[in-house]
Image 1 (tube, rainbow, N blue to C red):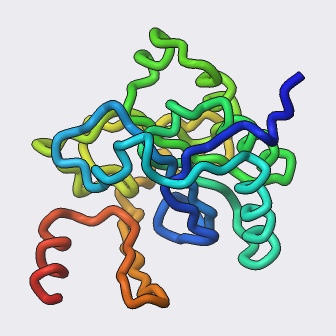
Image 2 (cartoon, rainbow, N blue to C red):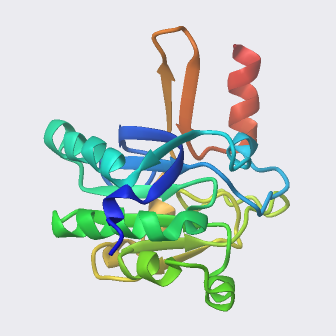
Amino acid sequence: MTDKGLLPIQLHRFLPVTEVEGPGKRACVWVQGCPIHCKGCGVPWTWNPKKGTRTTVDDIWKKIEMSIEKYDIEGITFLGGEPFEQALALAELGRRAKEKGLSIMAFSGYYKEQLEEMNKEGWKELYEVTDLFIDGPFERDYIDKERPWVGSMNQRFHFLTERYKHLEHKLTMIHDKLEIYVQNDGTIAANGMVSPEIWHRLLDDL
């Protein structure tokens, strides 16, 4: 039997705590690699599956345990890239997280119906440990300015458990936010979902 802790993950970025990538305080795992290539994607540098850092489930889980202890996070968000291209490994992370009482939020540029049809390894396992699932590609001609955490109006919220069911009819009351970090080397990193207009204003000011 394969040790699932050794399952590889091609990682773009791990953020130990964030308050803009889903409900409450969460750790965030961005995977590297996406074949969908949405026009206008805000993170095209996550497309190439050969970039990023090769790591394992065990290594990321150690980081998540530190986030639990240090930041009292309530869950984990899987972003990309395309999480369902690495579904088997993320499903194992999700399984461990659920045993600790954490919630799982997962994004996909595929629609659920496409995932069912493609039947990629581990997709169902990842889907079944997810509390809040957001599916669909980003469509730049249909920018969503009403709902949090998504970029375009075609993207769908699936409340798969009771964990966040209370938010289903309150989404328009939740405002998007942006987090900006100045790294030790002086570079600036940001995460969160804001409109292109706000990004342009921020960049113009810089």
